[in-house]
Image 1: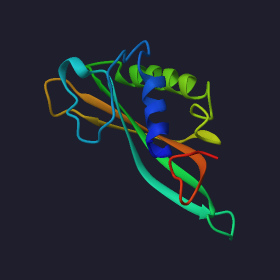
Image 2: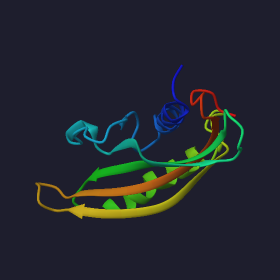
Image 3: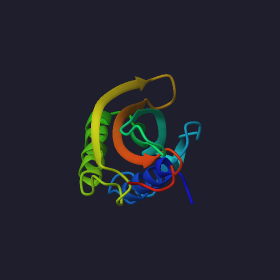
Image 4: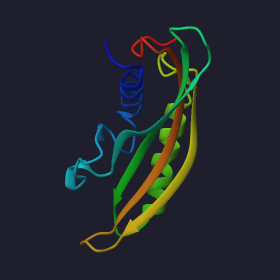
Length: 147
């Protein structure tokens, strides 16, 4: 079995694959090079996770809050803001269809948006980062089974 955190990441990737603008350019990696035919594209990875204990007796129930980064890459000479906003619209609509991430989570929220631009190449690359917060519960001795 897989860790619930991985199941959630896989669910997010599945939901984001096939969007109108980015098509199948969705990659689960922090270090995947984004260029050429991979653009516009999305990188997905989990960044941080916090755990709180909800019960005292063992095995204790844990509530976990995991932050996933959804990085959007666009290469263009004009209208990159519009393209980023369109991709973010598609991402938000897709993510909010199932807040339980396939019955692995209790909630899904987009908690922040940040954008940056790099004009050093032949065409500027715009990057937007959506932070997606997913909460889920497990027993401390079974992080592969959601509660």
